[in-house]
Image (cartoon, rainbow, N blue to C red; front, side, top):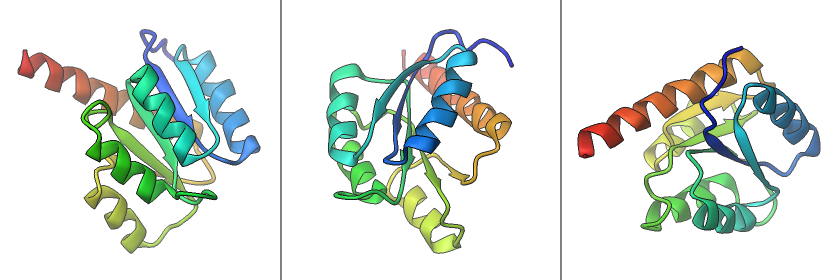
Length: 135
């Protein structure tokens, strides 16, 4: 496991077991972590903290991950933050829907932690390159 250069990740998931696994692994990888347990809280944390990336569960009480992502992408202060969906939903329609509303990737549950880390690092690299090109 390599160090992350201190990037911040907001994890939005209502399942304590998922949060515990991700927080433990990603903390050891050197990421700064923020946690929200539902979509509304996640949107507020994203607006306030401007994380480098968001890991977003699809199936949550209240507003689901799809609606959370829609709202994040409609808000000028959060629209450029990459969102990676996490879900046990394996159907193509759910994946396509998530990508069409603005997610950059999709991670299947149960997690393969090395894959999660690799996908995060890929998106952080892409975002850094986009930022560099924009400046």
